[in-house]
Length: 92
Figure 1 (tube, rainbow, N blue to C red):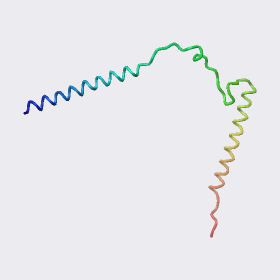
Figure 2: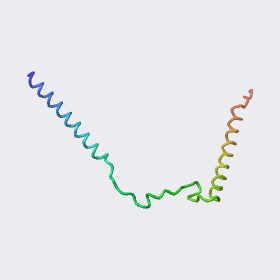
Figure 3: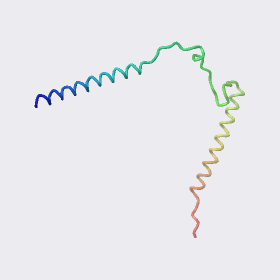
Figure 4: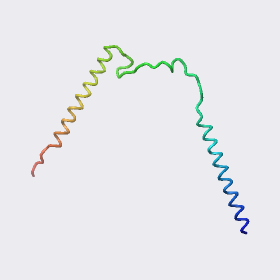
């Protein structure tokens, strides 16, 4: 009976080791990147701005105007939050 237990234990250990090796081998096969040559469309990196792909002075000025208005809105929101935090409680 003692020999049977040892044999079963060795078989289980062998199956775990073989399964681990198989799992490792399969994960390495799937993770291998495919080596392809990039096309011309993939190689051209055009700068993209908030107003699209316009990198002229007018496009940059339009982006700066948009950023200024966003900043102004954020500043007014921050001022409103600060005012609400400093509000004195009303006695009832």
